Image 1 (cartoon, rainbow, N blue to C red):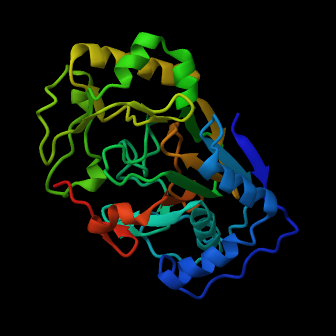
Image 2 (tube, rainbow, N blue to C red; image 1 turned 180 degrees about the horizontal axis):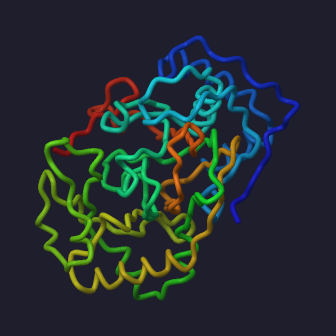
Length: 330
């Protein structure tokens, strides 16, 4: 189970903001709101930063989301909704750290709409629906990957299970020799297609299981690394993993990664997000995915909003414009 806290219904829903979502005035307004979050919610968020739970995630239920129009057909389709959900999501993100966007992801929006699309239905992207979204660390290939991923459900689907697996569960499940290999810099990760030029293609995921590669075979479109899958200390281990894009640089490393794949499949947990559920994932300690489901494409589909959070803006200063990280991979 994921640790859950409930938004106090006695706390009034915030008024919609007149500032543009993602703008600095909007973030400043969200920061003020963050200081007045229900005490149990604020305390749980602050504990996520300093003492994250073994599960690597918490769930906040009953979050206000405002008035909703029909689910948009694409993530970037303009909507006429108020900005209550965007404000609350940004307040949660700002309480955890510094919300950021990534230029290739929806143009760098700090709050992104995640909805199923016809074009993405069968792909390993956030707009998929007909396929399981493979377990992954968010942007595992990126030098400035987020510390936290925040997902706010505006409209749910009963068959869409958000899946989670923590590094602690995996360490408990794996033998010492496998963990020792996973702690070594013997793994590479391809770049997600959404971060590459449209004219280029990402490292084909079919190569993932076609055999080992040399750690030296890294280029602009090649895998990033090598780096370890499990890092950190015994008390605070970290996990960098992508079931679709990661592979070992030698047969023994690949075999260890295969065993990790099986452990993730056997030891993950899942939650069906409903309207008003806000899931906070420690991106350094847990991987996430999603089950397949049947999208309807009729305005009633599942609709999440997503925010990325880093703990230190200075680390990405050379690659960042305001809050938008602009690292190029192709």
